[in-house]
Length: 196
Image (tube, rainbow, N blue to C red; front, side):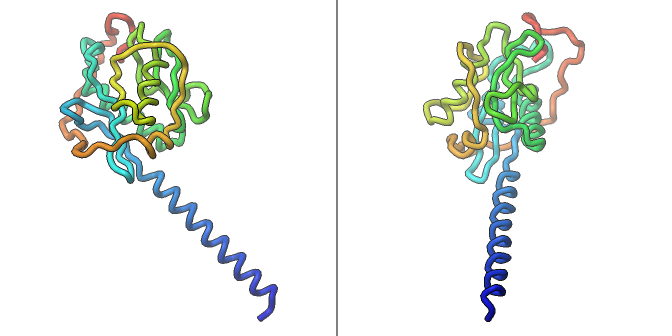
C-alpha cells in the first residue's frame, strides 16, 4: 500500500475518533438537570448528575414568605433559573454581586466576570460572599449544602463544573411533584426590600 494512502486513512480515523470523544463529553455535560426536591424534609435545589443527586441549596429561611416567596416557591424559582442558565451556557461560575442595592448570588460565564443572571437575592444585611463561601466548602467536603439563611465578608466564585464533579451526592432526594405554588404578585416587598 501507498504510504500517502495509509497516512490519510490514519488521519481521517484519528479525526473521527476525536470528534466522538467530544460528542460524548458534550452529551454527558447536558445530562445535568436542576430541580426542586426534598432533602431531609426541606425544599432543596438539587443537581441531578451522572454521579447522583447533589444538593446545592436547602431553602430554610422564611424571610421572604410574607411577600409570597416561601422556601418552596424560592426553591422552585431558583432551581428553574439554575436549569435555564445551565442550558444557556452561562452557568460556568457562581459569584456574588449587588443588584437593586441588594446582595445577590448570581451566575457568570467567566471567573471574576460580572453577574450575567440573578440566582437569588439575600437579606439586606446578609453577606453574599460568605454565603457563597459556604457553598464552596461543600466542594471541599467541609460542609453540607448551602443553607441560604447565613451572612459574612469576601468575594468568591465557584466553578460549577468542578463543584458538580466533587460535591457529595445524596441518596433519596427526588423532585418535589407538588403543585407549583404561585408567588404573591401584589408587588409589596418584604421588609428590607426585595421580593425574594
